[in-house]
Length: 364
Ligand SMILES: Nc1ncnc2c1ncn2[C@@H]1O[C@H](COP(=O)(O)OP(=O)(O)O)[C@@H](O)[C@H]1O
Ligand SMILES: [Mg+2]
Image (cartoon, rainbow, N blue to C red; front, top):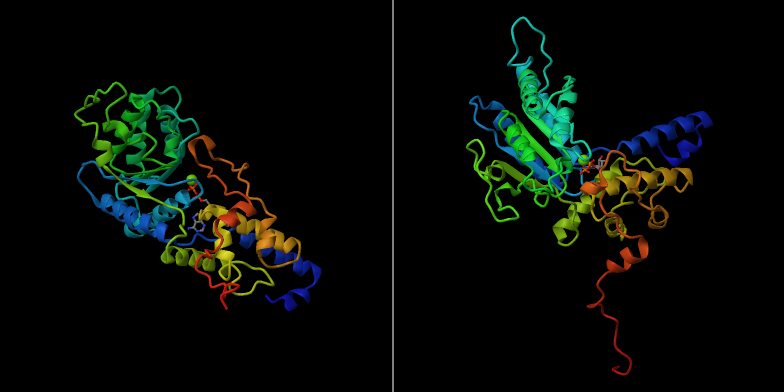
């Protein structure tokens, strides 16, 4: 739609068109990034290999770690959904179905860890996903019911999102360790997603406790086995140091730009001149923050009629995440938002050391 054609529309048609544009900007697509492709490679392969395993051996799990708003949830769900589609395509019906019954078939289970979670509430959250009643069950019963629900629904992948909410500050909280261990032997690919998993204590079991004793093996498990049975993959933010990194960021911006519906946008609106640098300074290369800024910018550009994104327009839009519903700030799920323009701008000014300023006075 060109500006001239839009102007020729009736007021009602204009309103309808603007509504469609607003809906487009509110639903910007998930774009593949070098970081998400790395997670995809590892996670897809692990899920598929595990899904085909028939022996009751413990399946290797995957831990996906990264800061808030970097796209962990979206990326992992997209990968799991792709697996679910292909698994359903392959089998048509639940391969473990019982003849003569109609089973609910759920190849992938996604559960968000409750805020200030404890082992019991984590189990309950999983059982809620299946709609299983949990009244008056103690922890061992809950764990057994989780195992039964996973098997009965033919679940191959269990995603526990925001797992770093699970209280792990007491490194020797035996319930937490027992829970993770129990999950690991449930014959699913366990995908643990969280903020800074290596620093969270989730993998610390093998290390000596505060009073320097090594924890005893429980049920024949060596304490270090948790660590060895998970692949850890980091979903990083974009970086802006090497030429490859700046190119990747600019490519991502080009991908975003393709989906914007602003009437006076020119090609290269987000990728030319100082715009990539500016957007990086505003968002620190965090995809979720970028999406937020662009979305707010588009709303503003349509409202005030500029119909294009410019640095001055974006300058007037503070990025605030205070209203981030469903996020636990204490678990690091809300990232620090870079400071507003002046600091961000001067910090990333072009390096002028090697500039030729012409002959100095007196040398000519
Ligand atoms: N690869 C991507 N391309 C575009 N937008 C993305 C991408 N990954 C995430 N987003 C957006 O960023 C926001 C935060 O993503 P989310 O998965 O919730 O982050 P996290 O779980 O790491 O906190 C979401 O609104 C999502 O749509
Ligand atoms: Mg998330």
